Image 1 (tube, chains in turn orange, brown):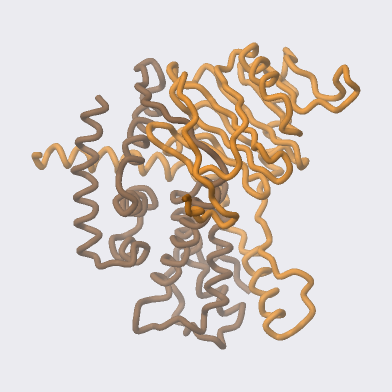
Image 2 (cartoon, rainbow over the protein chains, first blue to last red; image 1 turned 30 degrees about the vertical axis):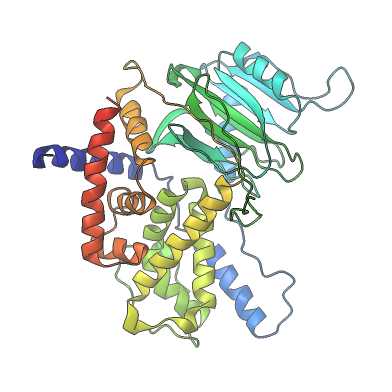
Length: 234
Length: 179
């Protein structure tokens, strides 16, 4: 392998790194308040003072993102799925909205009816699969790209590849436990499909969003414990 | 009490770190490098998780401050190592919750070129060894100096350089194979 060939890789990595850094959300890490609160609480705990729960404060930048999703929702022209009450009289689990700018907004309040959601998303023009994920699965990343996961509390993640917003984003809706996702079908790579994974454990489970080759199949899962450590298999 | 943002970009204050370090002193000590730690955590996890990772890493650093040994490195390198560890833990924990779909995607050229190139590269990066991936993430994406990459990898500067060289060679092959 020649030096110019390796230099080319070096140049490509540097360029990708620059693009990724340019995608850093503004203001990240600027506000130190949560860090100080954690430190303060732990000092109090060290001193034996009454601290109800010494737990890290989750940092939230969700209002800004929530505003973005609200703007998109206001521009909606075609409602494909309607939140509220279905014909059984129970609250709808999700809602799909096709917006005037071509984006598709999905709001999920409950992990029910994945087949119905998949049909609505496809009707809205998004090539998507909605599946139920087995609990506690180890990822198998051969060729696929992991784009977002819902944590213990939903973490908004821009769906990007090296910082380039590719086909959507996952802004926080502002109201737990609704999960709001926004997709741009026109920018979805033509041979790829968005896979939204509902957790089998509907209470306390996490939703995963993946970008994978159309027609790919779920890989066998290996159990993980609550700390993310692999559980030995026999 | 100074905010992290105010101190951003300056060098670390010459403050000792020990079990007697108070919260405000600790705050001032770590403030200058918080943006860098957030960037590192953002690369090793995601932007959405970065602040939580750094927050937890700093909490752990605070709890372990009495264990800091200046003869083994700087506060900066110590914090980088803790943040990298925390990011790995978070990534494992988060990914342990999902299954990922297999696929060998060949992207068409009519997708935005930049996004396609990066997606292509990202998929090749996934095929590097964990150590090579960490080195590339720290050096090229988080933009850490080699010495800081060594801190994150808990190895020597020479090892970082050779790991990066190996990663570039492997990437070259992977990129060619993938077309």
